Length: 436
Image 1: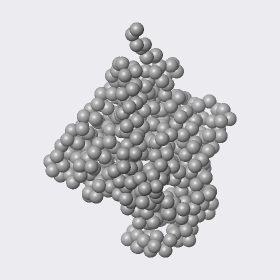
Image 2: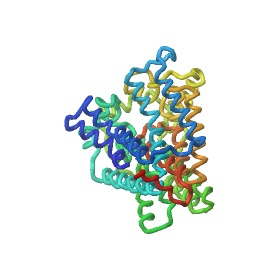
Image 3: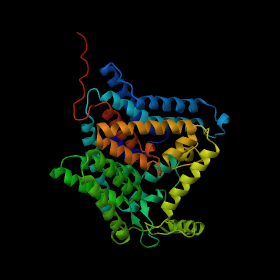
Image 4: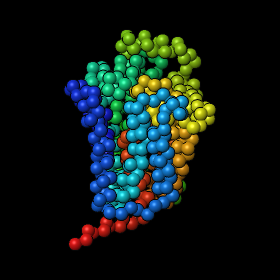
C-alpha cells in the first residue's frame, strides 16, 4: 500500500535522475512482480483454495473474457491497438482480479481490518504530504522537476495547458491572475489522491471514536477538500450512507450530510481561500485558445455547464453510444489513457465501465458488473466498511477509470477479497500446519 502510494513520485524522480526508457519500465514493474510473488507465496503457504462463491465465478468469467479479447486479432474487432497497448490493457483490466485473488487467499490467515488500518495510515501520509506541498512547494518547482518529462516521454501523455503538468493540477477560476492549486500529493493527481482519501475516511468513520481516529479523520477530510473533487465528495457521502444503513446507526449518515454541506461552502470560497499560483505566458495563450473553442463554459462549481462536469458527462454519454453501436468491442488497448499513450484513436475514455465495454465488449462489461454486484452484496453482509468503500469506488467508476489507479485496484479489491473470506466479527481460520 505504501509503495503504490509513492509509485508515481518515485518514477518521476528516477526519470529526473536519468533512469529512462526500458530500464524505467523495469523499475516500474516492481508492483506487478511483488503482487505475483505474494500470490505464489500465499498459495504455497495456504495449500488450498477458498470455497468458490458466485463472486469468484464471475471474476473467473471476467478474466476469461478479457484474455479472449487479448488473444483475438485487432482486425477481427475493428480495433487499432498496438501490441504494447494490448499488454498494457491486459495488465490494467486484470490487476483488480489479481488483488482480489490475493485477498481471498489472505483471508485464510489475516484479517481485513488490519489492511484497513494500513490503508488509513497510508492515506494520512498522502494528505500530510499533499498539504505540505501546497504550503511550501511552488508550481514552478514542479514545472522544473522530472514530472513533466516523465509524463511526456515515459508515459506518452502530452499536457499543454500547464507546461507538461496535468491541467487538473490547477482549478481554473476564470481569472487569469488567480488560478488555484489542487492537492496532488505523491499520486501526482488530485483525483487519485481524493479517491484514496475517500476509502480511508470510510474506514476511519466505521471505527469506534478515539482521539487518534478523530485527528486522522480531520486530516483526511482536509486533504480531500483541497483536492477539490466534487465526485469524490459525492462518493464519500454515498459510502457513508451505505455504512449507516448496513450498521443501522445514524452517525455516518449525519457525517455524510455534514461533509456535503462543508464541502459546498468550501468549494464556493475556494477561489478566495485556495493556494493561488500563476500561469506562464505560453500557458495563458493555450488556455485562451482553448476557451474560444469551448464557449459557454461556466466556472461555477455547481453549474451543469461547468467545464469539467460537462466534459465528464459528455465523455460518458459518447462512450455509451460507442458501446451500443459496437457491442462486440474493439479489443484491448483501444480506450482511455492506454490508447492515448500508444498513439491510437481513443474510442472512448474516462469511465471504467465505458472503457471495459469498448475493450472487451458488452460481455466483458457485464461480467465485471455482475462480479462487482456479488462482491458488494457479500461485503455488506460481512464487512460493512469495505462494502461502503467498494460502493463508493464503483460509483466513482462512472466518471473515472478507477482500476487505472493502481492503489485503488489493489487496496480496495484485495480488501474485498479478504473480507469475503472472513466471518463477520470472527478471526479467520488458521492455515493448516505442514505435515511433519
